[in-house]
Image (tube, rainbow, N blue to C red; front, side, top):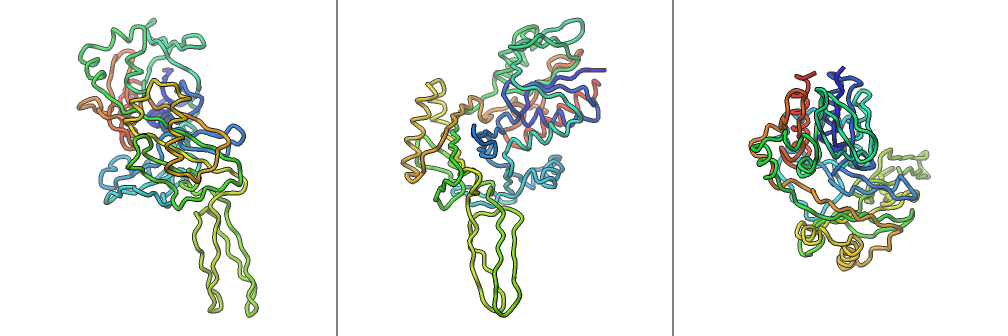
Length: 385
């Protein structure tokens, strides 16, 4: 039985493992150097409360109905299972595209990748596995990592950012031909920082928006009150008594942002307000920097970068409370600005045994691009199983 290794547990890697579930049941292994799934669809948690989360990577998913193509079924499945839901919260400065729909992930954006990994028919997923070397050994790929012994696989699928593929050591250095190397070296990415600010339960953040694009600050491009963006609040139940009729009860099983709820009964209107924050889960704030700022401070001391971002944030939102903890995330490879030219979504580096690479560096940095690459990877791999 062929052993298949997928390197990278981001959207392309997770979806690829899921697409191989029928062709290679129980034979797929996924390695990622991070501590959890998601890649750049990352959701972080407060140290004291796993329910207090913040999306530090992708903020929402945009579906362009005219261009969805073969990705349509992927959207429908995620919506059907509640992994994605329409983004209803107010986002100031968002440019609405005609014929597009925006979706958020109520359980955090990493839940999209986790869904595919969990549905991958027994794929073995291991984190903190940093691949460093790929070499040929007896007709198989011997894959080395920073910790743990090397392992052998019949097929290896690389879905990490392209510069990280080029950093790998071993026989792969000479296997990549000159033409492929030039194409891979032509891929470029933007860089940025993200901050996650985590608050204790009961903290209120009083701003009229759930997220906001910033256009006049050299440091900050986007701010999100992450729990409001994802409509995290306790379901509200209320019972109103009317003298002329029996008790009237209303309840809401899903979470909603604060807004006036009008109840009309017996010709009389009453208004109730639903809360922004859950009293049991602390709110969180996400800050994304501009690309220019990310590039300028890419190799600076993270602590200094964090303080600089916070100083700009205080000027934009002076009423923001002091967080209980902060996480600073550097995205060296944030979004693809130039992909491999004329790529079918993947590149075969070696045929027998198969060594293939893919991901958004071979398409584009959005949901459709990652899924298109995963589909291309799976199609190529299935023909070798």
